[in-house]
Length: 78
Image (tube, rainbow, N blue to C red; front, side):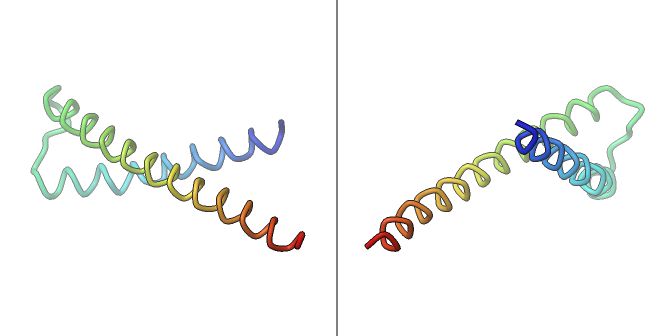
């Protein structure tokens, strides 16, 4: 169980680490004012879409590694 906790903690650190430059780039490129609630809605929804795409990418990578691990495990047994 500790292994899964470590993985979740690492993923949370990565997500927080991605948010800071993402926020800065949104503020610079789109001239968003962080004092307005509409700007925070735009930032939140954009980062949400970013995380959704990132999650899909992680699932695809996990699927690839799982499939290749099964394939090569069978190949090694032969």
